Length: 414
Image (tube, rainbow, N blue to C red; front, side):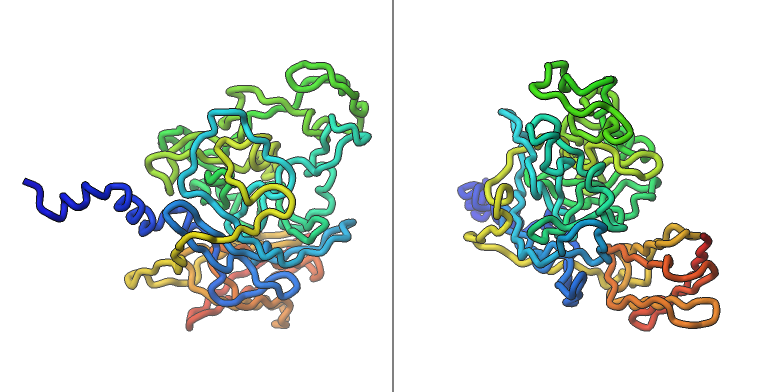
């Protein structure tokens, strides 16, 4: 005979399930880089994610769109990054879209883990404004990207069209990449590296896109072979293959990822498997088309995040504020990765998730003079040191927080 308590649970299975899901902290809740110290970024705007709230159905991410790492300048781009006051809504129950695929569209198509917007490969312009040959943002706008490969658009929305190299260590080919964002269909976006096999076995490898440059000598046909209604520019040094989205075609099985630039696989965060997108780069760490998502989403997309003036969702359901977790047995220290070292100019410091908070960094030259300062650095964030303004030589990086001190030599050799 069942005890009275179990009889009551069987009567209310839906309510119980909702309660358990609401109480459980899962990756779509815990993967965000929350600003818990009122840190500011570009133009003294609060950086990273200001608040994460969740219900049984959704996660709400409040953010300014400004990262914790240094951004700008943007050569030839007159726009200025500004506070976007976004509240993005991410479903906790993503499902595959078995109907007509939804185009990722222009503007934000997802959000990086630091609250910065994910944009697709299209810069919104077409050859001769004919709406046929769409320009590849990495080719056409790449010169305006800052050292973190981002830039702001007309309304001040800072974004990355490609792998955000300052958000995570994209040179780390020995570990499965972390979750670095979520697409607006609710599926995670990982860095560039995953397990060789979808069941979570095999060596770590860089995920390869299945999009390839087409073998064409002119731009008169579209991917698939259909005649283009309007020809594109002749292939030349000014308009090389890859300058336009239609210069690429999807070749099934040529890479690790599907047409959406993802796959269903086991990851460290989802041991039972999940559909996951991966950003794509080549062996030289150069962004590789389609960079983030493909031209369509894998899953069903909720209203509120996409389209003009979107990303300002109103929360109409009861939510819990995520405040993070900690362990008394885990004694944090200053844990970091520094690269490249030696360097020809820029050095990136990535503070690992298990590091202490509120780290101050001081860089001294060989004469003991202070040349660089960054205060209130937080874990899970990458920071940039600009040595292009300083001569070649040996420098000393000193990091301090909570009574702990770490020193690291940096060699600048140009």
